[in-house]
Length: 190
Image 1 (cartoon, rainbow, N blue to C red):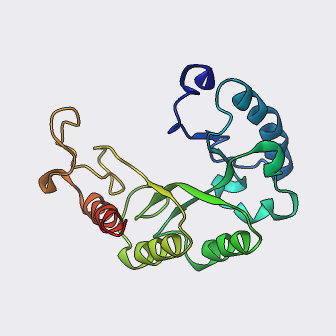
Image 2 (image 1 turned 135 degrees about the vertical axis):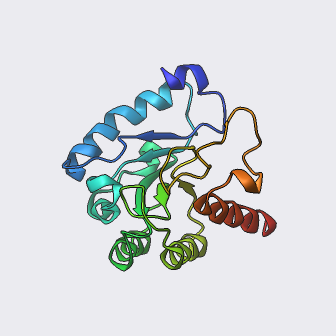
């Protein structure tokens, strides 16, 4: 349905099967082999389609021995999710292994805090992850652009999202300011 409505827009990115938990890669792959042709045939022949990976989209290395053929499925990538205060060198090693095996990665969710979305910002680990992503030109999306009362939120709880530009420093949380600075720094490098 989304492909039928928005398929002609070149900036639409599809993410299929978000954060599979106990689902093995073989099942996810089978699902993708059925869903991707439907998306392609309904108006999105060139759009990027991002495929979830096992265990909250952390086992991106599980794709290595059975990745989808881009000659058949087109413009695809595989999802990696991480929270800097919870996921460090071990998860980065999985990502590195996937990259070494020519697995395209897109980080569709990451946080600067623990995986529960709250707690202290881990600036050191966040910076290390951003450096890793930058080194390999991996696109990323930060969790969460909202005003929920948790430290992963980019906006202060009092922020009226519809009434105030989000880049005003007074409405950004510490995590929001950290991400805003990264976005600005990357934009200046273009």
